[in-house]
Length: 215
Image (cartoon, rainbow, N blue to C red; front, side):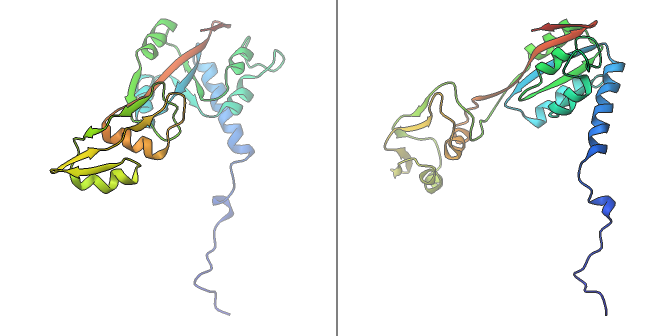
């Protein structure tokens, strides 16, 4: 019987999930970095922007950064005195929770801290971001073309055209302090040109010469 054209044979080697082999490779890569570089820094990040973080990787191209694999990194460096890869690395593990990573490098602490202290990049906030301040658009003329009228109405703004100018009839709460942004609010902020989200990296710990320092 001829084989159906819709039947496709796929090699099993291409469909195997990330399993023990994948995890072992990550652990080996981390330990290779621990053996190669003198210092390990634990950092936390807020409002991650992949494009911006490429610049961070470029800045530390002679070093090694491990991001987003907390449990595997903990397995590599150890979580107790008995299984830590090197002395006092268990304290590094304790810091690996949430949005964080490690930088393995030969660069001194002062240079690393100076770089990250100066790294602040403003960007448009995404839905779900919790603003630190409230923002309200007051009623009155808006500096947007009238052909955007329907677009703004769909976002929740009460707008009309008056003498060829778009006018906001009632105040609109674009952001409320402490409350997560809705998709509509995030879009309005973009139209307003307000970048309230700041990508930043904070170093919270350093392992140097076998000693861990909380920062």
